[in-house]
Image (tube, rainbow, N blue to C red):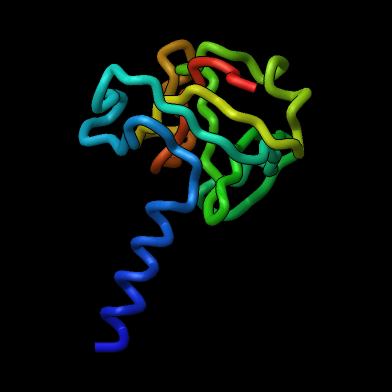
Length: 130
């Protein structure tokens, strides 16, 4: 019984952990938003070294948006902003208009088809709010 309370509390905490306003967009299908509403997400912009699925890291740095309990990978080939536009916010608080998606992180139509197959939730940034 106690484990069930912990699980419910954890799920509630996770649902309120990031500053998502209007609609919370968790994907039902890869690369398709659930609605056309604007979704605003606030957090700290951080960098992590590229880590392959086998745990090896490289000197390549990738940008993530840190919410209170999770860092979300930013996929730039699906974003309307560039890494250079976000870099001034590195290690600072930033608010972004986003689409939260679930799918392949490394597969972009313009890139080689033989890429890392990292998958999971990621962000496509539509605009910098502040």
